[in-house]
Length: 77
Image 1 (cartoon, rainbow, N blue to C red):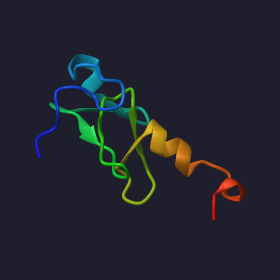
Image 2: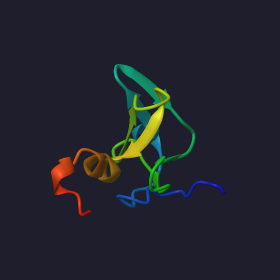
Image 3: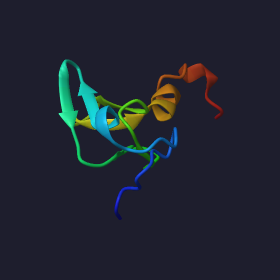
């Protein structure tokens, strides 16, 4: 599947700095949007971050990152 030309989170066109993903102090420039490893939406650099969860290059959108960071006692089980 080809990535869309707009971010599926903020709906802005994917170009320029929106394709410069940060991993700590390192900038990872991509030619197209990256996909969240959890929800699989394609997101720009402002809506997706690179985390070191399992592989060191885990791509997680901010919405999924907030869900992962929830207090375990607040989960609906």
